[in-house]
Length: 147
Image 1 (tube, one colour):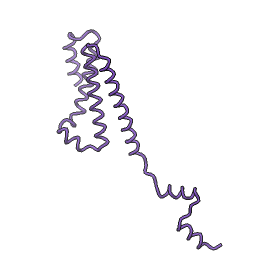
Image 2: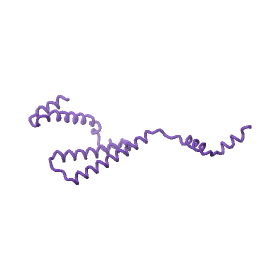
Image 3: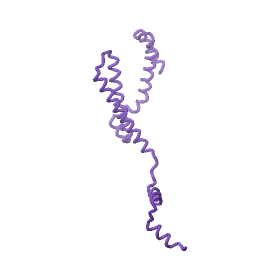
Image 4: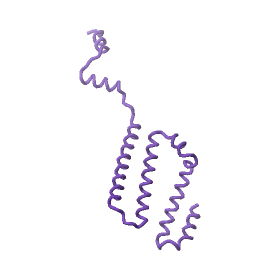
């Protein structure tokens, strides 16, 4: 498969400036690998694949989609050679900041889901003991004990 990509680059070598062929080869290899990795996901309709995911996985996929669209937009603007307007650049930075914040919140939710559950009964006992509060059970236990 890599040979096919290499042959494509070699055939198109005349179209690339010197030094670009290795970069294009790397890009084509990455795209080919990405296509292979996504083949199973793309084999079924989007809504079916999406409905089988957990809410956390859905949020991650949504983040990936938004980040990909924003990155492709940035690449388009840079590759077009047009001078980018300051407001457009600022809007892009704001959007990427929002994505970074959302990604942080997703990481917190994921960490919270992996955290072990707290034994609330044991915690309540520790707090009562620390505060010196006795319960009915403890009072009856001490009253029954011979001195």
